[in-house]
Image (cartoon, rainbow, N blue to C red; front, side):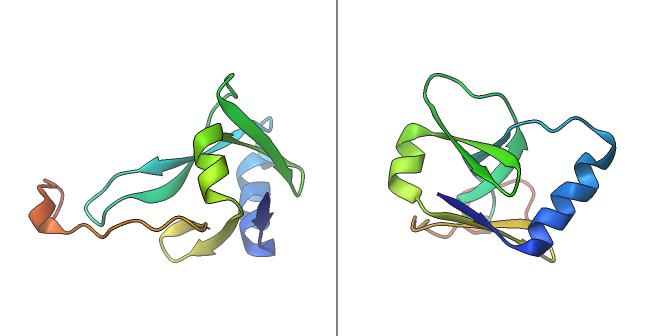
Length: 101
């Protein structure tokens, strides 16, 4: 299950205003701050679960969907913020990320 705030939906509406709607993938991305959930445009594969929220199709790897549902999508000052029941360990500059500092 995926829930989306009005603010997040409005941001997607603005993005797709002059584009064809595409499926949006929820995935785990790595970075200096540790792993986090992120969004990207993508097509569904056989290993995905598909969810619809506010007129948008979201694809999630089945294993991630089973472990992480429900997902909630909101906006933060940094962009989209995806929350789930998953807990990720923190990272930091000592984790070897070259983009820190």
